[in-house]
Length: 201
Ligand SMILES: Nc1nc2c(ncn2[C@@H]2O[C@H](COP(=O)(O)OP(=O)(O)OP(=O)(O)O)[C@@H](O)[C@H]2O)c(=O)[nH]1
Ligand SMILES: [Mg+2]
Image (tube, rainbow, N blue to C red; front, top):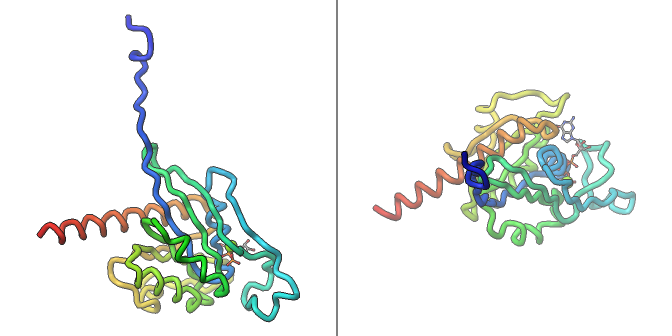
């Protein structure tokens, strides 16, 4: 009989940590999404939407919203024992654009959240990642009360490249959000493998 550590050998793996951005228009559910999947208490930088902000904060369509992200959301999720994602939610409002380049540093990929009632709000995020060659997936946050469209219809409306994953999710639901994160990671890894192959030939 063998005693000691070797008898219950535990596989020790240093997890790979990857950075994923969560972008999308104002009030589309970015903070909610990070909060739904994070295994640590998410860091939030929410400020109250106030009367003073009314001229600059366009709350049309999100009238019940009382707070807004002013810097970022931060959360963590372990997808597999060897794979940890750090999630960085971006602020949704245009006046915080200056933070994006900072947040995008070193990101493996991104999720662009979309609301079909205000689809145009996610164009800026899509353009941003396309221009910088950061792999991204689009996730439609299915608010109740919003009309449901098939993924293909949304894909056509957004004029997405063929390889870009498009998924339907509920930002409050851990499992659907996990599916989105897995899609982003797989897409980003496939793209970097493609690039390596192209470089080798
Ligand atoms: N019904 C429903 N409500 C949601 C869903 N996702 C978010 N909400 C609500 O929508 C509001 C906005 O969500 P947030 O997560 O703060 O949105 P955000 O994208 O972080 O907003 P900004 O940081 O201000 O751009 C909150 O009141 C949420 O409770 C959803 O899937 N369904
Ligand atoms: Mg937010």
